[in-house]
Image 1 (cartoon, rainbow over the protein chains, first blue to last red):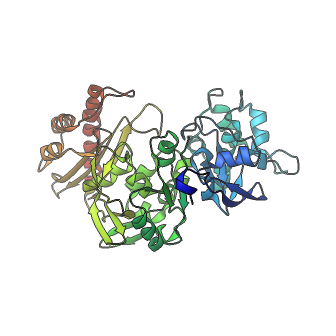
Image 2: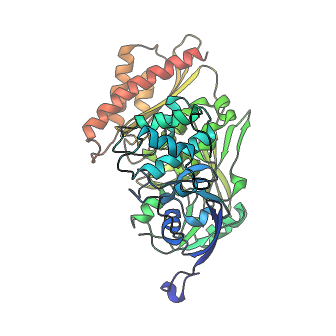
Length: 168
Length: 292
């Protein structure tokens, strides 16, 4: 409810969610975006704020294994759901297959799109174990990269799909 | 920056309609928010109350009725529709259109009704496509329900026929008859961006392959989706031919009422309408003959 006369501080709301397997209880203003919760409240700054108009994909995270743009999702809407950010990809200090493949294929230059790109690729691989080249290109259609020309990213996903990288 | 609002999360459709009736003058509905949050962040839209229907699973469904066709619940995401075997079987064109909507991330979170009810839906892919398919929308309020053709839903610039206590709860697509072909395309510079112009067409042919019925709908060519009725009339009773397609394209271009903006001039948009109408009518016609 709004404060007296409607000009008071917005009452904070309880939000329970899981990020990278860790449970969080936060008190937030309901207008807070998921990207703000991840970066400013939880402090995981791998997820980037890019265009903030749902165009560039730099803020992509997974919600229940679905890729979404965290700049266009109200944090209150992920109540009770499981969010995975780029920090959640590595297991026990070891890079995930898609991360290793990005390194080997040089699938990044400046690195700004990389966290979002990795999450889109990971979501694609969770959904389709052996995607075609076309499916990989569709899978990253919502992520803009100004450095690589995308081919190295496609190669990285294909390398993982081929089984060149074992988990762990 | 987004202005403060009071967040309301109804647990059922009934509760949502009660909240809507109570706050109808100062609330907005959010589902996926893939369009809404952009205009809220730009400060173009300020609301006291935000009613969140994203969690209403009772409105997330796809069913098929032999008589009435596909019925898709309001909160069903684009991605669910795109991946639905039922939709693929009964209305494959809708799967093709859904794949053109923005990007996977947006289709994962955004809903069909949110797309159609958003003020700028005329620039989207679904509104023109569903009008060409004879689609309808079901609107609910605490006063009762009503169903209206989507064609009548859009009334002006960022305006639609919904009363401020109404909620779009269902999208309906009638069964596709035999010898009917539907297609949709848009022209844009970046794949899956909003179309600079979009054209959706449905053609029904008779046994002799003449045009029995036609629907040509132009997207982003005016303040609402526009049915190019003169172009449709050009086709009625005729056989497919290059000259006829050119005439239909010409008619559609003069019926379009586009604006000039950063993406394209009015003249260029009319040119696109002419070319895309020719192409879409031809393709829909051939599809209709094959479906016979």
